[in-house]
Amino acid sequence: MKRGRHRHNKEKNEDKLSALPDGVLHHILFFSDAKQAVQTCILSKRWKNLWKTLPTLKLSSFKFKTLEAFTKFVSHILSLRDPSTSLNTFEFYRKEYGNISLVLLNWLIELANTVSLTVSISTLKVLSLVPDLLKIELPSLYSLKSLKVIKNPYSESIPMDIVNFLLQNAPSAKVDTGEVEDYVMQKFLAKEIGIKSESRSMDAL
Image (cartoon, rainbow, N blue to C red; front, side):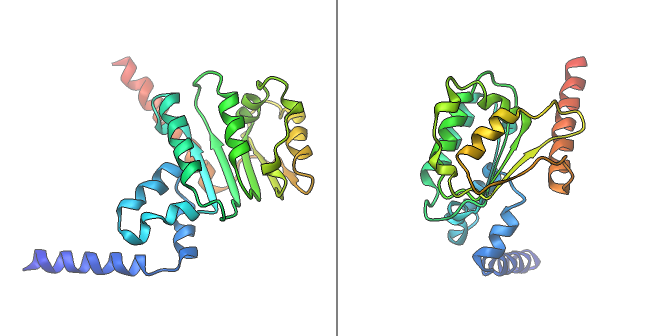
């Protein structure tokens, strides 16, 4: 009897969450990366397509074992995303897979209605490896209003030639090159450092 009551209360709480407006649910998913956001589609019919209208897209390769798996996932995301939804923020974090410059460029070309773009210094350096990059046009960035380059105290200098390239395609954008200060990013970095430390400990066993 208690078990049935517990299940009923759990379903009732889930219904209350699903009843929230899209804007509120989007804000909740803002703190998740793209993979976590997509996984919410199994919660209920209410969540099935919610991730497709997210105004924020955070791509992190740290949760994928191979470049092929990561690129396949991102291509899937971009192809199914609702193109009528403006993209307020695009964030990209990567681990060392080798040269993925052309892959990243293709993603930037596929983006639609991007208002804010957040990238790391390493991402800019990956982009700099694209042959004849400065001759390429990115109409997908024309509506860009904000370009943020994240860095930490140990970051190398910002490749300003790549920043200027992005700005050439985004005439109305303003640049923010401040250090990583927000809680979400600090939490992200701390998590990745913890994963690397744990991996080293396992290797030592």
